[in-house]
Image 1: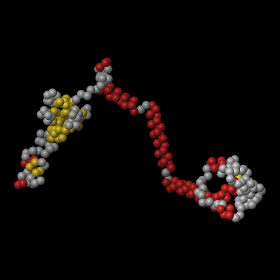
Image 2: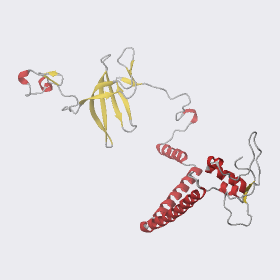
Image 3: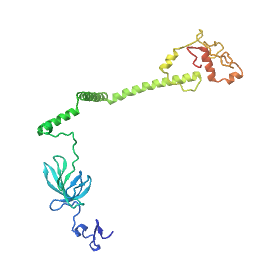
Image 4: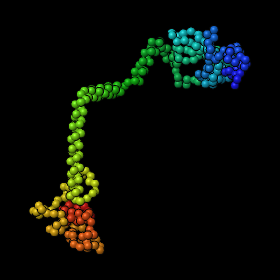
Length: 300
């Protein structure tokens, strides 16, 4: 809206020639004054009792104020800041400063930090015969506490073993890949050998499927297949030219009990309509049963 700048009114005839703060003799928030102070937004770091209020009222943690900030000095190279703020409920002022040595805030005027208590089991130095420690003794005990916390004998041993194992892995990797060309050559040779082996297995599988006349996928041979194959023996009548399904096939070495209504007959294929109606799968099954000696009937 024309005539307004940063929340303060500026007449139209002075628009663009001066600022609203200068016209109203106000300083912008955060601007550093000649005395070294500035106004900042301050958030209460902890709950504080306001002593100006009657009775004393508590200001909760996180409540925000416009505070006057100024530098009080230095702790070594770290500045010490003081924040003076006004409690709107009573009009009283509180002053809080930083304590770089203890990394904390301290209420120095107008109130007191809320005491949450340390518990009944806390024993301070000098109470119940507990010795008062010098700064050197306190530092030594603190280091001992950290040492006891960080490492037990077993944990240190495990850490050393793990570090040794990691170093061995790094050395092994550097040794194996010292000559990348040689490593790649060995990997290619291994891949070619495996590829040829897979090709021979695929060719053998396709040849077997052509011999038995089936399109069923044949799974790779397993150890269980080898064990079961040892339980099977094939008929040998001294003729190497015996053909599966020929007229010289003998009766099976084992017989399955005939079902009701089913006629037990020779596995030989009859001419005529029965030969046409019988599938290749049934023919193969009958011939395997008639020519195989097994511990049990695999089709029963």
